[in-house]
Amino acid sequence: MSALSRTDTSAFGRWWWTIDRWSLAAIGLIIGFGALMTLAASPPVAERIGLDQFYFVRRHFALLPVGITLLIGVSLLAPQQVRRLAVLGLLISIAMLVAVLFVGGEIKGARRWINLAGFSLQPSEFVKPFFAVVAAWMFAEWRKGEGFPGHLVALAMYGLIAGLLLLQPDLGQAVVVSAIFFGQFFLAGMPIIWIVGAIVLGVTGLIGAYFTLDHVASRIDRFLDPGSGDSYQVDRSLEAFMNGGLFGRGPGEGTVKAYIPDAHADFIFAVAGEELGLLACLLVVTLFTFVVLRGFARVLGEQSLYVMLAAAGLLAQFGVQALINMGSTLHLIPTKGMTLPFVSYGGSSLLALSVGMGMALALTRRRVGRGGSR
Image (tube, rainbow, N blue to C red):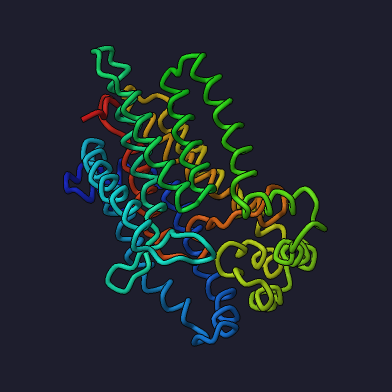
């Protein structure tokens, strides 16, 4: 790669000299870590539910080339092309969110997955990155001062998406979408009265969820008082971190994956803690932090409000999702079934994150003039 000349005018040459190669390398390390953890954590889970030992491994490694191709391919796009992709993707994602309520398979009382050509797809994973980009575009158009009510359009889209997510129900994804939306709105110049309203709406929504959604109430109760219900997975997770210590028991030597049902997905960080130890986990946290902070640093001098808001939303989604997963695993917040980006097993998550971070890399590329709105 280093043999590429800065005068290379090919699409790949221009991409290589404008992409943030440090962020790309950090994401690559996270993807590699995820592949290693899938090899370690998924075979016992597959055997426990009567599947072939390497069932999840094969599926994960079959999707990895697709995800990497999407990540690189999308990062080649210009900001205007990113916007077009996001608009099309958001329309399709919203249509699937509606469809999943009628034809989606019900698992544990929730309808979140839809089967397409033998592939189980979770539309909520895809709506997050696409919405972040489209909302950023709407806010940017609003701030131009030409009378276009982009903030109201974005608010209407947010209301529709949050409502569809709550109908599944999927409070966790609704919280992530809300954090992205209101964070972007704040950066775009959210009026004070709206900020107060958003805080009131958020508090009211969480209280309402506690009293109307049994699974939400159960998770909060168990977080506040572990003795009030089944806290088996969290207890085993914390034991795994204690057993792992600083340096871990060694790759493949952990035992927690034989007992936690979601060891390959929601609790894969616990497997890493037991087998690789605290120092390795801190390194992973550092990689996630580096990607987010490096991305924000790249857009600090951005002249295009659309590019700045879109990149901020995508990076916030990446960071918030990682925080929720790690926080749940360490019992710092109530448990929530959410994947650790690029690490947990999950086809929809892997593909959606590949597209999302590909768009983030595309938007943080160095461009002449830093205008980037077209």
